[in-house]
Length: 573
Image 1 (cartoon, rainbow, N blue to C red):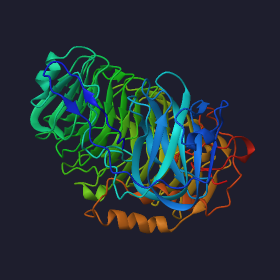
Image 2 (cartoon, helix red, strand yellow):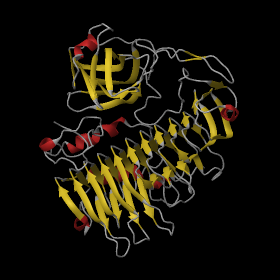
Image 3 (cartoon, rainbow, N blue to C red):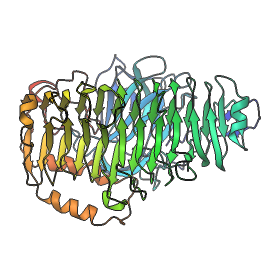
Image 4 (cartoon, rainbow, N blue to C red):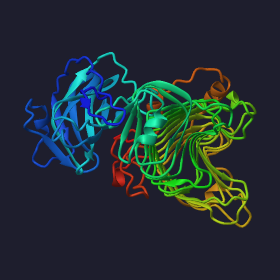
């Protein structure tokens, strides 16, 4: 959590003076025994810990990092960073921790500096034990450089960072107010209607559960706390919807929590939680959208689907937390995401605890699905699904199935670097799909069938050209591949097949306890699959992946290239 003061905002319209939250109480700095970096330009890593704000460490490129060695394992509660030219630009970065210095866990993903000052800013994390801490930079608003004048690692503070969850949001909105041009403490619709393109409309906490918020212009609408609305409808171009809580109303009225059409929108940090909402975040059925970012939203407790893309192009869906979806209406499907359209990027999402036994009629409960079973022509191709966690799901991690057309409507997916645990008949099912890449994943389950099923579901349209490599394939005791599946593969390189009968026990425990509480975040999900994969002797095996731009594992570690690359979505060496 950014705890540096955000200053005072000068606002217009419904003018109100607003200020940011106070800084958290300072924790004790931990000793740093060594500092190293991925590279530098002559401004060396030691400059970041010399106590002098006039010196800096600088490195260029996406993923440049600086690493701090604490000497021994310590409890880390936050990091403090002063950014070079931090008053004129905003830097994007991850905070990662490690016990060994070789495998890393991302504890604060894609954080952004305030852009309002050159002094230290504190970034809170959930207290965690680590010897090594590193900051991974992704450039700034001016260029691709990461430049730090001073940094320190601070000890335990007993704080839970709240909104800075590793995935999704805690539902408390976005407290940022330094850029507000309009502030309102009443119904936000009037403020939006009066706003002009480019305005930032900040909404103070309030309950507007009977209101549909309609945004049809290029404005940012931000909830500075818990702001409840019935639903949100976004159109036009370049709108941002930030931090709202969407609760719905009667069943199918509305059917969609946040619906969008148009181009260039950002839908970020919203909580959708309403049992009568069928589609939590979805584009318009007849007119989807392009170039939209759906990021850091939490969806829980809704019917049917978390994210539904009816089509569209170049939509990025990332860092969302989708969990505990169920239906009491007897729906056929309860899916984390249903993805149609072209050029989409589905990455770094956490989809978990979709329990069919919790729903009326035990529907199919899959992480990601596109199943074409009607006369409506829908295409989906050139889609990348990477670095997602899909765990404790009654159905499948990915189902792509052409059900009615003898044409290649669904094809050319890349499924890479994912952690997949599903308890249905298979982890991945491809039906009449000509072309897909499945690489560098760990897949566990298929307890009542197979890990992978590639088959024909439409006459005269085979599943072909499936490239499978560098995966860890864990079955509960059945076969890894359904009969005939290997005939669809044009590449079967360096996959490791493991047996784990306990997956069957996990399946029975999961579906046999539908009333068990479901936490928003289960920290074990980000470590136990690494431990499972390490039971096999797979270090320094595998092949360079097909995807030349695949440079980072699911846990944020940089992938090793060449002959030494490891199998699965983790690096061990």
